[in-house]
Each structure stands twice: as structure tokens, then as C-alpha cells.
Amino acid sequence: MAGIDRIKESILSEANAKVETILEEAKQAAREVTERANAAAGKMKEEAVEKAARSSRDYAGRIQSQIGMQQKQTILSAKQDLIRDVLDSAHDKLLNLPDAEYFGVILRLLDQNIQKGKGEILFNAKDLSRLPADFENQLDEAAAKKDGKLTLSKEAADIKSGFILRYRDEKDTNTSSNYGSVELNCSFESLIAEKKDQLSDLITQNLF
Image 1 (cartoon, rainbow, N blue to C red):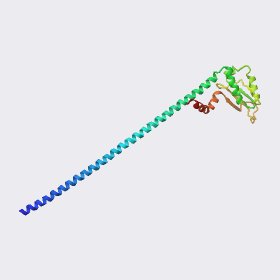
Image 2: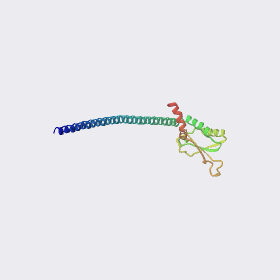
Image 3: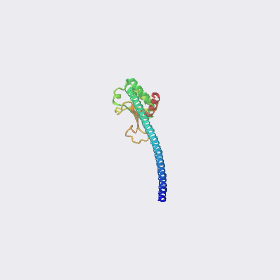
Image 4: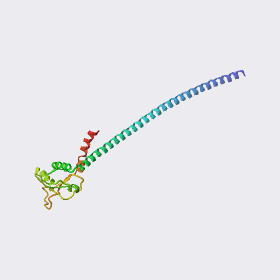
């Protein structure tokens, strides 16, 4: 019996030792798993924080870019409005000049645009009714300087200001009309529109 008891004690001792070993290994494994999980969680947290920071920077950058674009558009729109107001004001001033000054501008503009040959000049109804008494003589003198001849048309042109010049192209064989195949629109509104980009650049240089 004593031998059997010793054998039991030996077996129990080995079993307990193995259990302790298994428990220790399990605890170590659990610690390693916990450490890896903590490390992974820490890394995930760092990545989440960095991702959030990047997203925040990207969002802030987009917002700043949008703000900058809106500012530029607002400034550009304000400049365009101001330029348009300046051009409109210039046109209004021309329209409201006293008759003598107004037709003085007309003659200077005519001198720059009159052509050689026979033509006619058209004004709007308002200007036809207020032509200076010697204006047709002044037209003759202006045309003669360019070896031309201008006839004052009684037809009212559909323009707000300035004048229209009509000539017949020398290549035009239609002799039923002396005028009409070549037309120069010298209305103030047309000239301002034609020179808008150039005038806008000039006004921008002086205003901004």
C-alpha cells in the first residue's frame, strides 16, 4: 500500500507541475495577447488621431480656398460694377454736354473717321433738331480735308448719340443708291463698347 501511495503522490505531483506550467503559459499568452491588443489599439488610436488631424487640415484648406475664391469673385464683381459705372457716367456726361461742346466732340470724332469719297452722315432725331446753324458748312470743310463729300441725311438714326457714316463701296456696281454698302457706326455707345476692354484696363490701372 505504501508503494501505491507513493506512486499516486508522484503522479499528482507531476500533474500539478504540468497544471502550473500550463497555467503560467496561459497567463503569459494572455499577457502577450493583451500587450499586442493594447499596442494595436494604441496604433489605431494614433492613426485615428492623425487621420482626424489630416481631415481637419484638408477641410480647413478647402474652406480657406473657397473663402479666397469667393473674395476674388467679390472683388472682381465689384471692379466690374465700378468700371461699368464709370463708363456709363462718361457716356451720360457726353449726352448732357451743352450743344456747342457736344457738336465740337462730334466734329473731332468725325475728323478721325471721315472717309475719302462721297457719303452721308446720320444723327438721331434729337441731334437733328439741334444742329448748329453752320454745321453743314463745317461738315463740308471736314470732308474736303479728306477729299470727300458728306451729305447730311434727314433720316433719323436709331442711336443714342454720335453719328453714322455711310459710303458706297467703289466696287459696288449698284448705282441705284449712292450710300449704304459701307457703314461706320460712330455712336458714343458703340465706340465705348468697342473700346471696353482697353478702357477697362485703363480705368483699372487708375482705380486699383
